[in-house]
Length: 385
Image 1 (cartoon, rainbow, N blue to C red):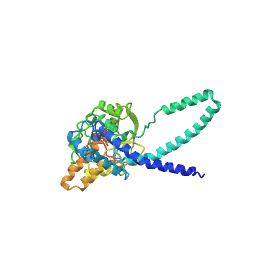
Image 2: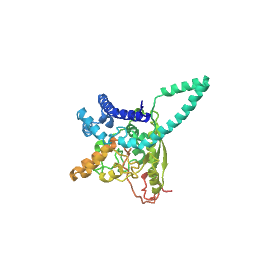
Image 3: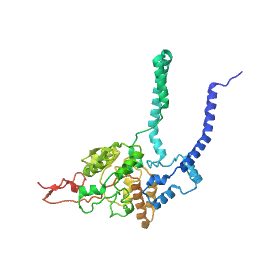
Image 4: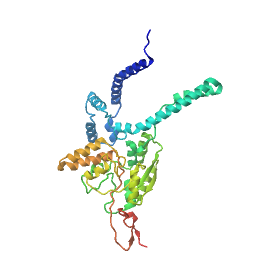
C-alpha cells in the first residue's frame, strides 16, 4: 500500500488551517466590533474627554462616522482593513498600520531571540530533569508551571504617545502663575494653550484657549488611567534662551511625578542637531506668531522637521489642514481655527504664553547679545552694574 509522504500531509494541514482562518477572522472581527459598541462611552468621548461640549462631541462623532448604523460602520472598517488600513489609534492618534509596522522589527527580534533562548534552555533543563530527577527535576517542574501561569504583557514605549498622558501634562501646568512669575506685567504676555498669538486669527481659536485649566488632581488621575500612577522620566531638550520657561513647566510636571532630564542648548546648531537626533521625546522652544497655513507645515503635517522631528501623524488633523488649505479665502480662517482646536484637544503641545520680544537699548540695564538667531528674553535683563 502506498502512503502519501509526510511532507504532503503537512502541506494539506497548513492549507486547510489557512482556509479556515479566513471565516474565523471574520467571526472574531464581528464579535469584537459588536462587543466594543456595547461598552459604555464611545471613541469621540475618549478623544475629547469629559469636558467637551455637546456640539464638539456631535461634530467628532459625525467626523468619525459614529452616527451611522453599526453594520455600516463595520462595512467601512472591513473595506479599509482589507486594503491594509486598520484605522487610527485612539490612544496615540497615529495610524494603526504604521504603529504595527514601526514595531514589527523589534517584535520579531524579541520573538525569535526569546524562542531560541527558551528552546535551548528548555531542552537542557528537560534533559537534566529527566536524567537526574530529585531536587533539580522538581525545581524545573515548578519553574515550568510558574512560567505558564504568568500572563503575557507589554510595557514601556513612549508615554507621550498616549493621549491621556499628554492631557495630564497639560492639566499639570499653572500657566497664569508662570506668566506672572516670569513676565509680570509685560505687555502682551498672557497665559495660552495655543501655539499662536491672538493677533493672528487664522491660528488663534478663542474657544480652546482655556481648554486645560490648572488641575493637578485630574492630571494624576489621567496618568493613573494611562498606566503611570507613579509617573515616569523623560528627556527634554530646550533652545536655551527659553530655559526659565521650560524649567517652570518641568517644575509643575515634577509635582505629578513626571521627571525631566533637561538639556539646554546655547546655539542654534546644537539645538537642531539634538532635535533631529530623536533622542528627546519633548523639547522646549519659542515660535513666532504666523498664519496657520504656515504653522501647519511645521506642527501638524506628518513630515519630519525641527518642530515635529518624529513626523507625528494624526489623519484627522491632516484632513483638516487639507480642507482648510483648499477652502475659499472667506472660509479659511474658520477652517484653520479647527486645525488649532484639534491640536489643542490632542495635546500635541504644552503652550504656555505668547512672549513679547523686545530689543533693548539703555545704559541702565544689561542684556545678553543676540546669539546666532536667538532673541533675548525679558527674563535675561538685569540692572547694569
